[in-house]
Length: 271
Ligand code: PEP
Image (cartoon, rainbow, N blue to C red; front, side, top):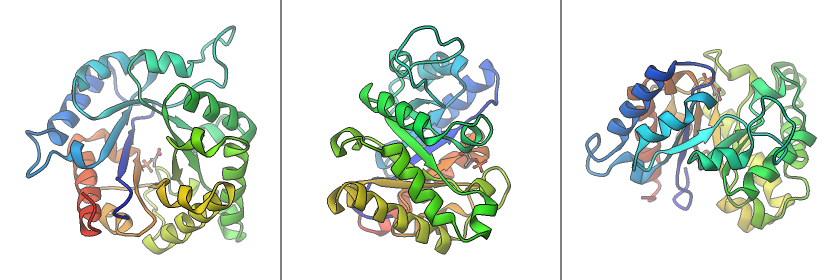
């Protein structure tokens, strides 16, 4: 963590839950992160927390979040604004439902559905134009890491996705470093490996934009983060929070991860 960058913790619920359990989970997250759940400050005041439920449950989860500071987000959006795109959901539709954030380029879409940097560039552009705080995921596969290409792959993803977007446009973006081999596998990058890649990402952002932009940009880590390992990762100077999959499905674990981020941030003098 760094004192100048407020932590961001996202809970990616993926294709889990049903309507009733999604609402229940949202209510439990609000209870755990809101004024009643934490002392001396509500966690939602210290950490930018967001939940990303499945599309059909967005409205109900949004209602359950009520006036809490926990943000609602979509797990993806279309690269198109509107029209004949069966099954897709536009960034404006997400905004209409009260979303303030959206995940772009999750590895389950890059590798599972073949989404490439050119498409993700368009999605990122339209999401940011709509006013959403886009969480752009980047990360290498295990074979790319074993071949010593991890950093090159991630830097190329950043260049491909940010492309020609201006610093002003991408101000609202958060970058999530999610090594593909660590997602849902129980394997996490070591805090030192995560720090090395986060520093490289910040360096690339500096080359794409400038050092002031890079110093302000939030770069979060994702990949089997849980209540036990979160603090060691968040203590790294270039790690500004996390994108959490499995552990975000339990409100208590999600709150513990938010608390770890708040404590790591507070240790740097941030508040
Ligand atoms: C994710 O899906 O973004 C993720 C990091 O999942 P998990 O925490 O389950 O590895």
